[in-house]
Image 1 (cartoon, helix red, strand yellow):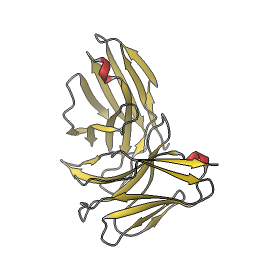
Image 2 (spheres, rainbow over the protein chains, first blue to last red):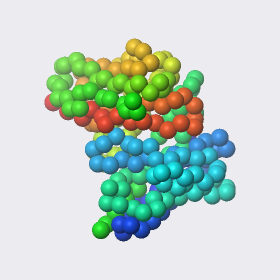
Image 3 (cartoon, rainbow over the protein chains, first blue to last red):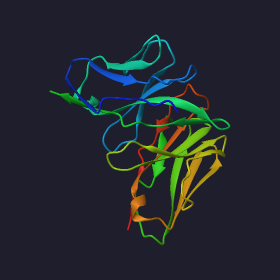
Length: 113
Length: 113
């Protein structure tokens, strides 16, 4: 299974962009990169995913390098409510119709006023 | 309806008890998942159901018994648990296929005494 590596923690000032890096150097050609976040004691929340093109939605932007070995999640204007653990995941197909989403350790983002 | 509903939210059970966790979604998702999360750790995959059939079992002990009675419901039957099984149990659902994000419930916090 492709492994992801993320910084343990990061700080960001409120109102500034938060750039969260992720390394996935063993990713295969058909594996997607997903980002989720988990606010304390809640279930993880889907943010965004991509294969090789950059993606943007109402929550964030995802920048994937051309070689697909790393990506960056960008929260354009971080707020205090964005304080959470952010997980970068490579989704793996296994079994008959089964897909495994394996969470790594994640990055704990602290947004400070 | 865009939610995954888990009940109960909290459960305390003795080591000789039998209890069940329930998960429900009405988004038409045909894949459903159970995760276990210990404090300050990422979620760990337990089971994957695809089209109501068990697709992946991540070597979970038999004291945890999943059941998918229909496309909207997922149960986790618990019997003879140990105190170390105390954790947050998360249910998720998704469309089948590698390019769809998961929707997670808010979890059941289980305490085994």
